[in-house]
Length: 416
Image 1 (cartoon, rainbow, N blue to C red):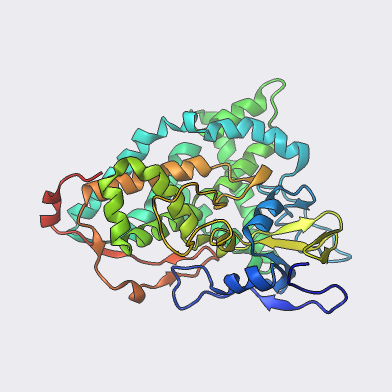
Image 2 (cartoon, rainbow, N blue to C red):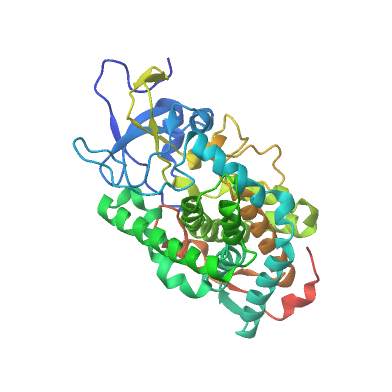
């Protein structure tokens, strides 16, 4: 039996590992947990507890295990004697046939082939953001001028969200992303607000029409024999706001910081632009983005590493730890843009693997390629250790990335 809580002994309850002095890496406590306590009871910021999984094999298996289901944001944690409020499930929370029915319709919209049409549009967005940076001088904050606006522009263009409404829906989105550390009434208020907004937006789309994803799904919901309902389209809007905005800002910011602090790796990428797909996969694995907690709930009793998990227990697979497990990745603490194979679980695994994974990859690929082609002399203008970090949600990333490039650097040629 692997080390961990011994049957018959009181459960050890740990805190979720905190960020270390170097916030560019996942908490080093996971290294010890993977060896000594691959499954251990941990306390979430909201006071609830769950079984934390730190090994790659266990994390990957948990996401695919039919005995572990996504709980509803509106109904977890379950308090005895209380009736869960009625809320529409997001795609992340759908299970069984409902999930399969919706996925059959939505997944093709996010396939590689369908998304190819987005490449010129994303490139235009990236070029415009760089034009704006250059027009302002030879220095910029890459977070506010590049990493923040790009994902929202891509999301609005693809899904059909009005960019002008961002001050309405984004605050509620950020509340839901930090749900594990907030009172349930705050989470419910944000969820209801987003669902109301999505429903009103759909009313408008029904009147005005269009060719964005919301309109495509609306037409499917009205088609005789279609597999979607109008409520499913509402859930789609809420899901895309939760999964497609802040996480992509954080992915982009962390990837940029990783490259700017590993000049030899950035040089390799500039000299071998055809390897950018490998580079993107390694950046998705390497960055410490997903110290955020994924919550699954056991639907029946079972045993893992000698520890009895009971129906109703929360199970917490930690992607940040899995992606740095030396049992799978050689020298996992090193950024290696040539790493292959690279079976990271940045997008989860199994039936609830992130639907927008290809869109995230595409966005990051175009952003990096164009940025370093246009600004070959790009570098940090302050030491990395002085950077401040965004702690507004568990998805940690630099709050600012001050950079410079200089006119002289523009003569270095187009390296990518």
